[in-house]
Image (cartoon, rainbow, N blue to C red; front, side, top):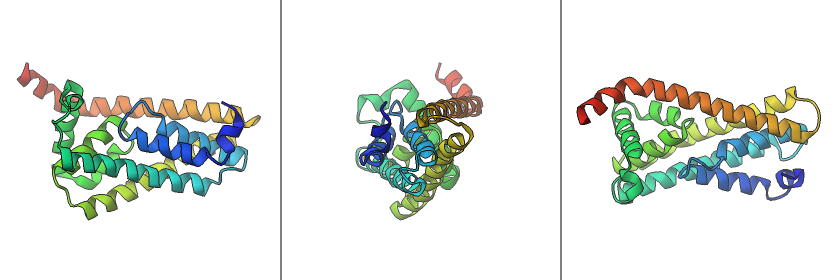
Length: 201
């Protein structure tokens, strides 16, 4: 990808759109985009790191809030994709966690794409207070944005050479961290999911 596309006037907007889309489709590389711009902010001087974090945070909150609205207005069963096995399992998991601690699950799920979608949908369907939800999501989204941008900034500082090299390394690091978080989250959920699958089968 040409460096101009990542440092030009549309870079922050493109990143923000990817982050919003990532709230609904986990294959959209929202995290990667934030990490890449975080690296460029150090390696190239633009866009500013504060702008990367600010735009990413706003986009994260907007994406999560949109999922919340869908859950509140549509529910969690109307569309076919909501009735898939994996989605149903995630929604059931999210419902149990929301009942036991909304703040904890919102902060945790922000870093786990599939869990994030489920938690936000269930929060809306469960009629969680909108002001309370938005307040927690704003803090979680800002923390996530700062973390993702910081990963890129640290990699950009540690990797010398052309900015593109730093961006590539930061993207690899972001994907690796995401994979580790996903594996850990699956293992933490498995003791809870196994009895349910046995009962269903």
